[in-house]
Amino acid sequence: MSDLDKINSQSGSKNFDFTNFSQALSTNPEPFVKLFLAAGALIIIGYMFNDYHAKDQRLHARMSQEQEKLEVVSAHDTAVMNLNNFKSSLPAKLSDYKIITLISDYAKSRHVIITSLSPAESKDMGLYNVVNVSFNATCDDFKEMMLFLRKIEKSEFPLKINSWSGNEAENGRINFVVEISGVIFHI
Image (cartoon, rainbow, N blue to C red; front, top):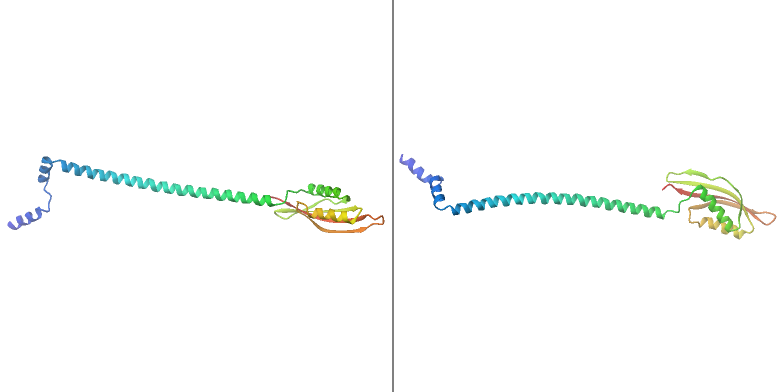
C-alpha cells in the first residue's frame, strides 16, 4: 500500500483539493472575487465584440447593397440622358400634312406655283416611315426654281429630292416635276 500512497501523494499535487480552496476562499476572498469579475468582464467584452462585429458586417452588407442600387439608378439616369440627347439630335417631328404644308410655304417664298400634287404615300420601315410626295410646278425663271429645290434640300426636316425634271414652255415659264421623300421617325 505504500506504493499507492506514494502515487496518491505524487498525483495529489496534480489534483485539485476543494477543501484547501474553500479555506483559502473563506480567509481571503478578495483575489478570487477579482478573478471572477475579470473573467466575467472578459466574457461580457467578448459578447459585446461579437455583437459589434455582427452588426458591423450587416451594416457593410447593407451599404454594399445600397451602393449597388445607387449605381443602377446612376446607370439608368445616364441611359435616359443619352436617349434624350439622341432624340434631340433627330430632326424635328414631321407628318404627311406638314410635308405638304412645308413644300407649299417654300413654293410661295420662291414664287413657284404648284399646279398639281399627288397624295403622300407612306411606307413603314420599322423605326421610321418614308413619305413620298410628287408634284408639278411652274415658275418664271430657272434661278427661282433652283432656289426652291435647294430650300427643300436644306430644310431642317429630313427631306430629300429623289428626282426632278423640267422644260421651258413657249411662254417662257418653266414647268417641272419633282418627287420628294421625307422621313418620319416613330421615336
